[in-house]
Image (tube, rainbow, N blue to C red; front, side):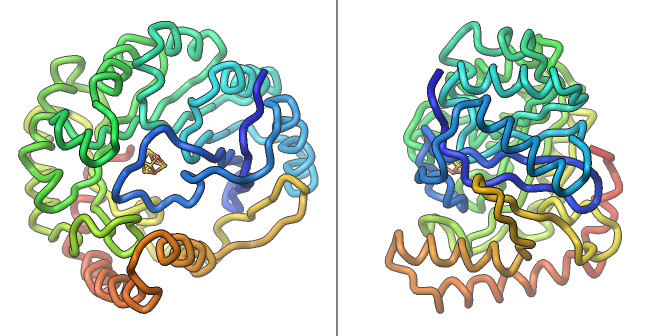
Length: 314
Ligand code: SF4
């Protein structure tokens, strides 16, 4: 079995839950904001990964949790590793094992979804970047045919499915979202579908200069809801809290078992450092873009979008 680069484990401070951050990716999304895409981390087998996870969780929680999220980068690049990781988690009596993926590898290998189900995967969150193949190729470097195939296979499996799309003004907007919603509805009208707004500040390349407006997000919600029963629009995970997020959120544990309580500020600093190394935008430009976004986000949090956040309990 191969090794995967593990950047770190994230332990939730709100409830026992562990995230695995694996490095490397088979896409090169222009709007990527994840430094893990470019590799790095500590190369570990799945067994080594699980042993370190055990120790990190026992040190922090005094027990091993029952919920795991496997993310990256892209977690599906090595099938043997991923199957072994999922099986190892289920053997440890994890009840919820969630894979966050771009879906590509799951559609290329006809057996992958079935094998993941047999290994015990309970849930998959698939990013569908666009319905148009041309847009998908331009944005990610790869066709979306395998991603659509992966969604079909997951929808027909016993694995719970959530599909997500980032609304990118002028690129992936309401026309694309309508096509995606139609496609998902042709499989099952109950598929959960989440639309997230694009955040240009931390995007790897400057594909657009602005976030979608509140009205654009509302309109996308209305259109998708015309086809699907379970649609949500969301800014990010902390948007789901009805009040400002608690100060305690998560602890990052590195493969050498050192740990750090990283705030959003720390995470933003890492992203700024990554983005400013990879393109011509300076850290100052990125911070200016972020300030503009903050103004809009404040508006969202002050209530104009509040009614849409309670429409679904995804
Ligand atoms: S956004 Fe996700 S799928 Fe796209 S390059 Fe980044 S890590 Fe890979």
